[in-house]
Image 1 (spheres, helix red, strand yellow):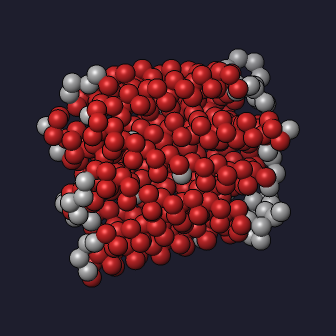
Image 2: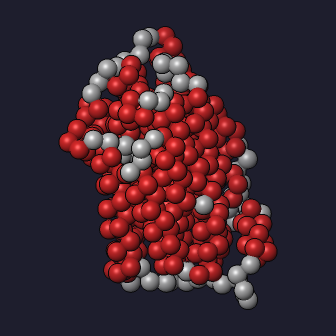
Length: 398
């Protein structure tokens, strides 16, 4: 049983990381791409916003599909669509085709985001879910750490299109691994034919679940803040601080390590606190870091330390929020795990896409649109956290 759990944990991690690669691997090349397509930095940032929008929206479709038709079918369908989108991006001759490629990629990868969360809920219906989502979150940090570094060297050696070639082969590799190792664990069919009416009924049941929206919204706000920083980072490090793409790629590793630390702290705090208490700790840390980020750069000139130290603290907080929020959101929903994972993932990625686009629209060659956006998002999460109630008396302990 432990061997089976380990295989499915690795599959969940692999599926989740596929969805992270497109939002990180080409970031070192955004300035080069803006020059190639003769567009502004903000217009290049829309590529990530568009991807995240369709990545989030498509999960609303894949969630019910995975509950009714199974996890394997949903993964295969989504990864094939993603590979088609990667091919479109590789051969893009203008910014419009790059946008279309991002749309198709996002429409495909909504499937892996849903299934990566749902298969863990299929396996665990008790306190172990927080532990395994913590492991998943800790392991997932490898992707945002590695993707910009890989992208920077691909840019130097082969040009910006190489990042999309890498995405294509990575998607094919995960598709083959899923075909070999992913088998159905438990799927709840909706009784009779698959229908829109049943889908809407399932979503209504999920939304009415106790604390689902509160936990989901907190995850949206905190993760959106981190995404806004990730998309702005190339312009902060390369545009304002005048660093090279390789220097930028290596420097973003340090703040990202905070997410790794936060994921393990989530598991540790869970020994003595309820899920909602663990989540509040992460939100408080994130809010403090945003205050520090804005205040430091308002009083003093922008520097490497004024960016990296607050972002390191923020990532610790978001590393605590990520596993505790998803555990609290989907734990009570049993066999509707696919639908629940779809809804929380969709809201999350729609939010990430929206707020990252907002930062791009208001980008003015300085740090303040980002700092103000992150502070407002963490403040919203703090406000929502005051409404938390116990999840059916569930308490996490070892």
